[in-house]
Length: 469
Image 1: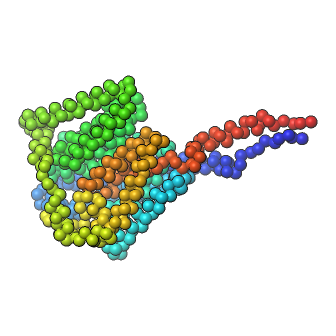
Image 2: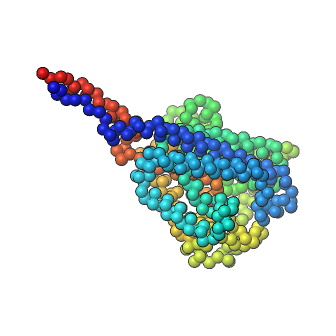
């Protein structure tokens, strides 16, 4: 008789193999949809800027500032709607995977905060939205419930295996946006800050977060071209910010460079010392170039750079925030910020609009104005809690980079107006998911490790199997 019989895989271990192909298919489909959503978002932004360029006039700019760009093409609405569908479908498809559910099972406190955030955002929208508003394009405004619901895109980043592909999406999108900024600067006249903001800021806002990722993380390929490209998106961002005459952009670039230098100093060994020296030389060269801009003369690009730099220096210390705060608090009591007035509540903001619904130049004040302290508190919990995961001793390099991007984002929101339904916000949300990723198994093992462990335990069983007499 048999002394010991071969044992087969238990039902629990056999379940590992059955859904493996299906899980890979879902992850691939989610990432394809995510990439498509990124590129369609860039396309819709380009269509808006193209419409602005074709209709540029003093009367047109006055109408844009008071009412916004109302006459948008059919192609824009098709691209915008398609990109929202792709992003939402990608997040929900990724949520259906076992890895995402296991990660969320370990982050129950964060999941509770996410549920409360979405609930409070929905209640805030219901306070001010009528049935007609829900059925109109107003429902897709970033300040409405859609701006909170789009957080589902972070489910695409909960699987560690997704991050090599997300990194490729970041790199390709940063290259496209950098090319569009360079093309706009070279082909479009930018005589004042008005044109610079309208033509360049829709590209520069999302480019910064992608440039931050590329600079801090680096590119996996060890080649001279990849090391050079690491600095290109940020360089384009800085130059474009000079043309747009935006002080906040330059401040964020300085903070990003400081984080990058700190990271390089902490990791210095061998080649890193050379890279630090090159980085310092690069910064010194930028400073020398900036000091030399006032010596440039003539027309063309040199004249445009001189004009942009000169106007930027003129408004460097101009206070452009106090007037808005004074008008806001003259109409809104501080006690109203406890519970808020509801999504897209309006106040009079001269000279732009008598019914201004975009909030303030401070996202935290805007959230309190719309949803009160409940919306503000849950928003901070959803976005700030993962930083601790990304900066822990067990975090992987990409998670550390994700944490730094979130820190930069939370600082930027102190002096920024609102979140957006574009890759400017999607990139940050993916970094939130990246900080939470990689903790789906209580044993600390990955699925591949479990499979190898199960296969290895079969070997001694097969050897011990023999017929006894």
